[in-house]
Image (tube, rainbow, N blue to C red; front, side, top):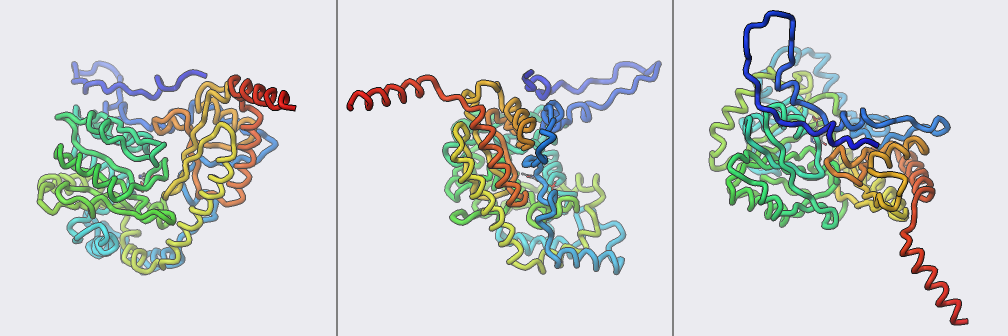
Length: 445
Ligand SMILES: *Cc1c(COP(=O)(O)O)cnc(C)c1O
């Protein structure tokens, strides 16, 4: 199939000046709108998604934990919002950075990140909005930001409209997706405005160790680069792993940590995110003002959820968080154990978050040229939809989500096995070696 790279690659054209007074109805879109695009959508829309009519579709592609109804928010959380709606206390506008009581509750909730006061908190419309404000506060046209590869495509969607280039630093699959630090350093130049770290990672499900995070922070420190830490999956770690916030390890580098209710509280549609400003040495004096300016653009986040936020953050029982993580871990183990047995696939066991990346040894499936062809055929034959790695700038991989019900994971693995067994082609050299081995053994008798 046609390589979709051309389709998704966007040339960052310079902003065009207005030429002359209009003499006809010719209404162009802004450069900002033209340059803003979602690479996942472009790729998925280009795929032929025609499931096998005899098999029910299993979508392992959707990064929304509420899709199948198996994961529900805590009753305490629902109750908190119900109360706010009924007492009508949060129907009006709030301050653009959020209600003080809500920011106080967030400051308390993120105390593990370091000393945080309500003034260091800005409430946003989801974590994407937090990232939007951070990127636009730090970077402008002609500048660049460093983003992980494979990585979440929202950074690109948010940056390119501003004329900000995304430069990709490599994560190394064979080393639990740690950052290739020397390659990272080669990307930095005078126009580099910020380093984005996603930990735990979407799509990798990786969790950085303390020492690795420190090594990354050291590079940022050496080049005076502020860090935007996308920590929407903080605390999503499986046994044997520990979550460390970037800010808790940084001594000199100022950090904007982005988080929110979306994933941990299982309410993506409620659009409640936040920015935590970590800046012990006051390097972000101007940036703080910039963030305040930008928050005026959104007139503040959803006040209904803000009103409920203190109760949401204080009343959700620990058992709720623990249950969610253990469910994800169980699903990860089931999927990993099963997919590991499949010839030609290389799953990488995640340490956290809600995803698993699976390497496709594409040369072992000669009918398919790319991960796009592979996932398309998998849908057509087995009605299993995995997101192709190209959605994360990472060909020959695919990502599955671990939030779907257990029986769906099991069934999907069964179908994946059947599909791969059918299409796997052994290397001729291996076949030859096996034949030779067999001959040698036969000759012994
Ligand atoms: C889901 C997700 C977000 C966005 O979350 P919203 O609160 O829905 O905007 C941000 N970063 C990563 C890595 C995500 O996976």
